[in-house]
Length: 360
Image 1 (cartoon, rainbow, N blue to C red):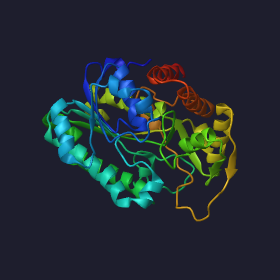
Image 2 (image 1 turned 45 degrees about the horizontal axis):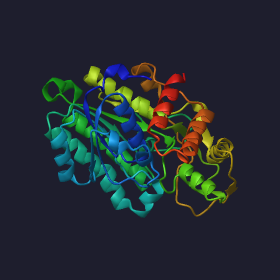
Image 3 (image 1 turned 45 degrees about the vertical axis):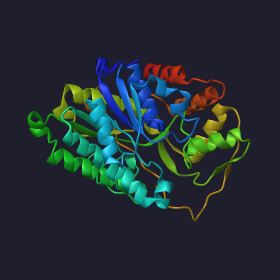
């Protein structure tokens, strides 16, 4: 397993959104690297979530409940544990939910991130920050080539727009308060990271493809697909997380150079349609049936979006995605099948982290 040069060993690190899908996997990985992980989040979405079935609460340095929109509560926790690094993942992460609750989406994604950055300004002990946003922060022109970190921010729907706004705010704060040119004065390093459609075990969110498929399969129902021909850059959760951890390591080593933004996307062959993903999941899970119920009146969602990861490759020790399309789906299906008869998925998560690292 990549130990990231022991960069995290013994360090107190705040992970916001640790009860969520990506946040729980990152917290497990950081804990296995010897970090003192302080989690700050709302309650988990489901009792079957990765956070719950891995018994993550028992392995954390501290497990605190709170909303990133609550600046006072957030600062109370930060003041108590004094983390030197923050991985900010807490977010409203669903496009459909953003149409239903736009105000909450902007408050969580934009203002919640603002509260993090204000805390970074306020507390001298915070030195490194990795802000997790989304590939949907880009102005999507449905182009066939991947977006680069310097491309224009945008967003058609409230979720995408909230992420574009957040990236603009991060850049503004970096320029205004944490400028790398003035690092000797402020001692802060802030990076933002963007990833695509992330899949993997332990996600039970509503209106998300893999959880919807698993729920239907386990209930003996047909999998209803509303946008079968939408193409996405599918990547297993461990792919971008390995990139986030590499960015954190580099911020510790060279904060001036790495206070910037990075894309983390899958192999090009992983740009597949929703229908292909579902059929492959059924194959690896061993059962299930999908039916096409395309809805012409469905809310707008982008049909094509991919990332150029050249910058990450050249600046982050040749970072690249390890898993093929088939392997990403197999890892995902295996986790859900294992969770059916395991009452502690912690070791299985570590097994998948190890297996991911072994892929080249």
